[in-house]
Length: 274
Image 1: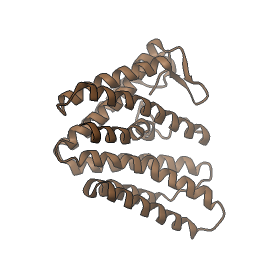
Image 2: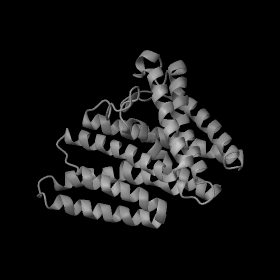
Image 3: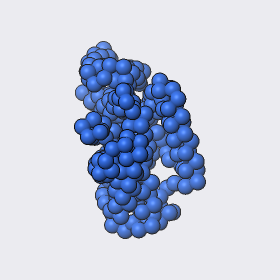
């Protein structure tokens, strides 16, 4: 979520960012409603690139994370969640962590705790968190619609925060972590999330508007905190962006940060309320 006052300080090429965002949205929606398995492949590919960006950033600080086993575990979690539900997701995650701990053990004792801790972090963030989108998709009645509610509401946080921030942003939210974020931008994110959430829950899921507004209110909090978490990681590792694969956006992790943070709360609320 970009929330700085003044377009010159946002760091984005807005036309390019819009075009890339529209393309990603079309790919997600197209695969979601026509071939669900293809959407899972898109998720695995996107999260896989995000994992690669994290691993590369860790490597720049001499922290070793085994890429191939982490990617294999992430893909297994997504597929297991879709076909087997939460029990399979938890089981595959636990086995992945155990295998990764053993994997690093055979490479010596020096730096074992450091490398294993970073490896488990990547296995949770974004891998485990992203797998919850498969649980949304697997809902027997309206899985694709639930995924759209999640994605659109979370993306609304970024869009609402961006435009409110560049127009009205004055009061910094967290100068030490992310100087561009403002409380005005957060307010714009909140309004956008609650409006989109209320609308989509009523339209796609045919349920009460207030449930969508509640989901939007929860999303804006977790999406913002997720964005700040990634900012903390980048500052600690000394990088500006995790990557440059998306023109106008940065790396995949720079777009996945708010999505993976908001995903589990949305899944919980949709499961309990809708």
